[in-house]
Length: 422
Image (tube, rainbow, N blue to C red):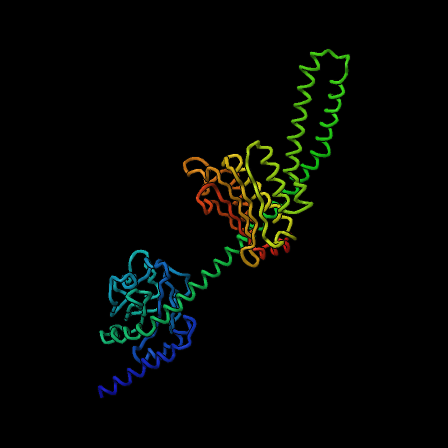
């Protein structure tokens, strides 16, 4: 007779295992196994509560009587009537009359369903995976003293069958939620990036408009004023001291102002970039910047990109030029180099690689001054421009260890996004 009872109990456990197979949802598992468990541990109410990954909350899934435990959102573990079990302070909980058991009723306890539904006899065992408590299995009966230690042992065996499934489902749901959160975050980030890109395009357009206005109006006015002063200075009837001490210095100053204004206009509206492309604009900027610096700097542009610069979205082209422009300016102003090399290369299919390398004094140490990590406004602008076109910007030492290397890598498939939103 004893062997028959053991075989029958073993068959029930096998039945639970078969019912668990293929279940992919918490409620489905409870509904599938509740009847089989009732043959082992008779109950009026069955529930499994699962702790959240952070261990602060728990969620209940139940069969039989419907209670507020499963209808509420995730509840704080500190308010659970079985918090001692979930915290590992008790190995099991067994109560003859939970309605009056002080272990279930304390300040802040969510124990009203016990009273409301007269869940007198209660039995609770932990669900454990690799020694960690992930939740609890609970059986309740309206009768007093319905459960014994034999029922506790049976519940532990059932919990050992359920725990791996609930653990896997919890991990899958957590991964799903994380994926959703990550996708939403990426969508927000992409929306912000495209919004900032539109703003950058508008600012660049306004910059060019100002450049054209300065050229068509202000520079033209200054040119007419300069010619009048030159004619005035050439008049022989004027006193020599007025011509030599006043008019000629004013003419030179005005010519210098006009030259500076032409430089500002070119910076605002790079003509070479618009007419000939990125490589030619970089080469023109290198030549002009080195010449204007008055320093004996050797420079070279090496373009082995196999035409990858051709046909770039205008916003991408301008951003690339502005980044290289700032890198060259920084090298001349702060690096005191002997040579500057700008290398444009095709590192992989669809990957554009641009390097600005100088052999100057290198990136300043991070001690109050600009650095590759902290950086001044110029470096911050370069990083911002790179992010807006989905490029990666790195600033550090070149392979030889002397000077500074500004490296920019741009996957050109990202430019399709810019074209769609332009």
